[in-house]
Image (cartoon, rainbow, N blue to C red; front, side, top):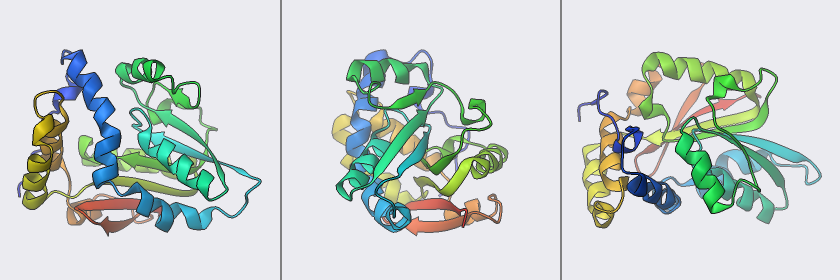
Length: 226
């Protein structure tokens, strides 16, 4: 399946319908639970590094949206007896407004900015992103991976879609009921068309990052400081 790097998601249009945009953000937690496998990723990649119940670990969520993934990781860690302080960064001005409406901004640390705009001294035990990489050019990917490496104390995980015609058809069918009251189906299909395959990504990433495939049609870029 050809990669269409020039496509743009509807929700990235500053003039997009605000009602549909809000609904799209509200649906992300459901979609991420169905497809993104953060529970498995937590068990495999984060939980083994949590070994001090008295320590407060830190986690940065890059391109966080409403931070449903990092909130979920925080919840999973709490069930295991560990504390994780989460921080989100996202330059989209709509996100902070929606967080206020959801009354979640009291519980989390959110910065309306890009990661490189954080203080140079800001480092985190864990850094994650979900569905960010396919928005970036190869040069932007290497830049952000270098930035994340400098800020990582334990491990970073960049999760994204693995482009596939089967994934495109399957996602389109499953999400069809949401086609007309949100951007979730149309933008999801666009994201799949824009996404990199693991082989393509292996030609981009610096050699201190590894690539791991996950089901269904997911992969992670992993940086382990140790």
